[in-house]
Image (cartoon, rainbow over all chains, first blue to last red; front, side):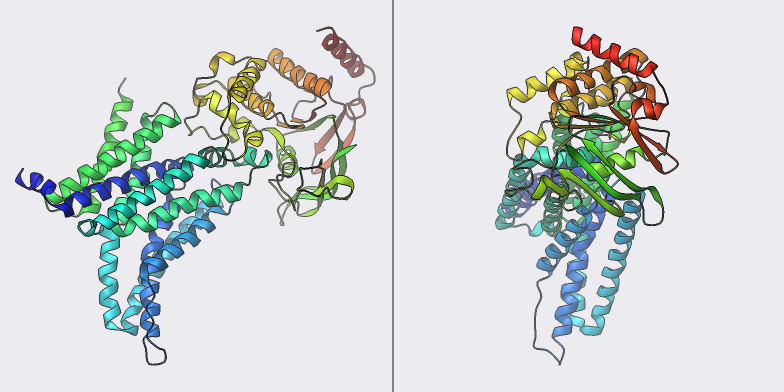
Length: 289
Length: 260
């Protein structure tokens, strides 16, 4: 109990709660599109692009620091952001993601990116031990998150991200929904399906790339998939599904992070378990006559 | 006037052609029927017409009006659909099974999607759009279901929702892929009559694909018969091989429409 109350006495823990709340809510909103389009695997590819970008940036930095080149430092977060955006554009290119061949391609991309990230990471030992140690720390942050390091500036940055995404989705919600629901009819009515798909996946990709550094891959991915799945079980219409997804996403994030702090557990897996528990409760509630 | 021209078009994949060397035109204001069995290529043909599927060979040209193809109207008014997908707007009724039921959308939400071509980005449906959607739902006989979830409807009702959505688009061309499949004979006749009225009164071009030629015998001006990868086009009587009966039925139907 003391540890629970202690959470609200430190600026760092309050920043952590607010930051995770924003990230969980935003990912849960965007995740409704991901789950409705059955693009969960594409979401996993986008999540995996961050470790890939960081490994690549550190590898290139290590390579450029060798005798042959002047020291150059590539920014890992920038590399992660750019690679995620490129992946988002490639994912959005096909007209329909429900085709079996598309799913196989995305699954292969997921495997390839994961394998490549590990290989590049392992190769860092070749280009310098310092990079390797740095990379290991970065990877641990990315996977499990580093929520305790969310500063006031970080919270403001996350708020700006959430407001920007909110504005884009408020302005173009009907286009994003139309091309997700029925791309054929959208094309028949003269809509630029590829453009809107790309814009939608870019909002998802940018959010993932920026949120992942603060909260970690597990928090981001679980918020992207589990609260929307819960919401689609309970929501009677699409508006209700979006609202339920955001509420359960924020709730899962805050409860998970609190449990992880009080019981000294890793935050990412704890948030994931809480989100999963909420999904099971929703499933049981829905099946009850 | 030719609205759509197929010039030596082959459709399918690079390995296997589904329809080969199609050369024909669909005229503006025509009721054009496409008849063929399962896997005869009806949906493939319609998807090519909508610009969703690119021909592996040949060209599909559509006639555009001023403003539809940018500022400059091309010479003769024809543009290649492959170069400018979406240049012509179609009211499209897909096969019921191709619509994703996971989306928890209401009937009203879906019909309002038909208004998106008129609305464009940064514009939201107005009262006029909502009224129009309600009117189209009434036309297809399900106005009381506007607030219901699409997934909860019967197959027949889902079909009507998709027809209402295509009607709400108020496009100059309607493309329908087995739109009355699963309906009772009486309802089928009523839906086809509604389309025929729209074709007669507003001059909307109707391109209608079906497995049952009897649906169209009384209303279509021309039919395309798809069989084993080949296509035969002609007047309804020529295609159905009927000398007098069909013409009589068509005459009776038109007379009934005029009376009503």
